[in-house]
Length: 254
Image (cartoon, rainbow, N blue to C red; front, side, top):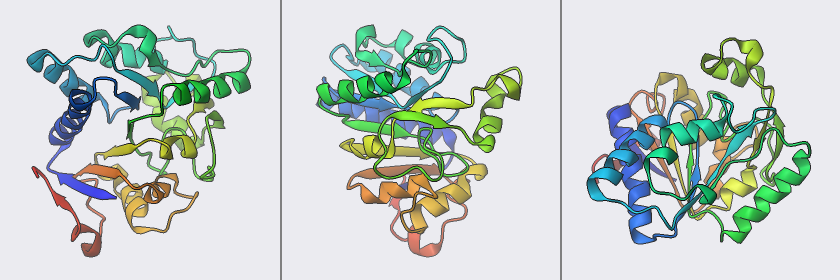
């Protein structure tokens, strides 16, 4: 795992955006794996800026999102489909039919999960997967205990995840308790992975991800099993890392 420590959230967002834009420049048919939540918002903002400034063409690209809340329609303002439209898709020229988000309000979740896995396979797999990390070490909605062999499935959200996401709803009671999420094996199937972490609240999860043994108890630590992972963290998120880990850090700007 390649560790890049940057000064702050602004620099983190810019570096991540540059990585994704470089991918589509090199391969116009890039298949992106995308994340939601608070951390990637700045990255999407920077992608839009770069797209407009450099006339970046996303017309042949496609995307698959990590997850969606069970029970929310795609038009619900707190759905991850709505999030992606607002924060990225409405502002670049990626075709709507090539943007994929799991269906959260289907009547057959097992079929939807199988359909999503097959769609990823038919697209040729994900070229670059963007991840955030939860305070408990989750990636996507793969909570602690998620097995390394897990595929897209319905997951039960932990109380801490529900509480963390309550800020996007009017009350904690409105937060869905389940989500459709890519599994660990699905994520590890991407050719490249870039994980973003910002803020002191993520410092312990970042430490466990990088310094602990790969374990389902810290799902992000299973990324150690992948051959091409870049972890971009700001100084606050890196604040609990030990000297031995920091010694192998790729300097910002390189």
